[in-house]
Length: 218
Ligand code: ADP
Ligand code: NI
View 1 (cartoon, rainbow, N blue to C red):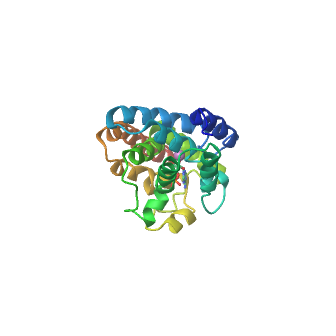
View 2 (cartoon, rainbow, N blue to C red):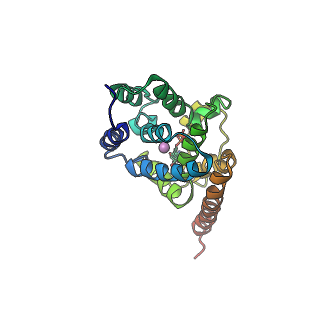
View 3 (cartoon, helix red, strand yellow):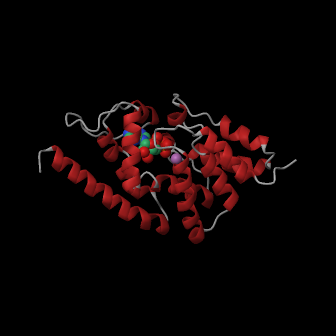
């Protein structure tokens, strides 16, 4: 029998699952991405159920959240199967979740679902990595992994494979140049770019000020 309200069920499942999450991928990250996605969807369109299920479930099996070498997609998929959701819906949601990560796109840049829902979910997730929230999340992640705030002896790297990106041991400040500042160019709708523009500018301002203070400016 099909569940009456898979979204409500997903909300409790995900809240439980992400309880105690300390890398910036907690329940409130999910709430923020859903709010951003709703704004993007009002302009771009897209299926509400697909977008919301994908955002609710996108991080439950993420390698950073489960602290393993690889993502575990079975958590999201098994949840949807337990809800007796239609196969086509499950497939669409899983295609989105499996293709949305920055690191995956380093290995397979062309391998993305041709769905407006994919763009909305991926862009909402990326927008939450930018701006004041993005800064806070990056340092939360770095602290969780015992990474230094900054190390002026290191230089930023350009990653061309997922493995190199994952293996990198740089400082959190370097992560801004290595990933966060690249995101603006990877958002390809007007609506997403509009939001990203201010967030990107705010991060650049923060970085300049961080370096100024680091170098002794009072
Ligand atoms: P994706 O999950 O799309 O592959 P990432 O693995 O880069 O993307 O992680 C997304 C979020 O996790 C970023 O927005 C950032 O907050 C955090 N994050 C990932 N790697 C780092 C890092 N090395 N330093 C600081 N934050 C990171
Ligand atoms: Ni996310």
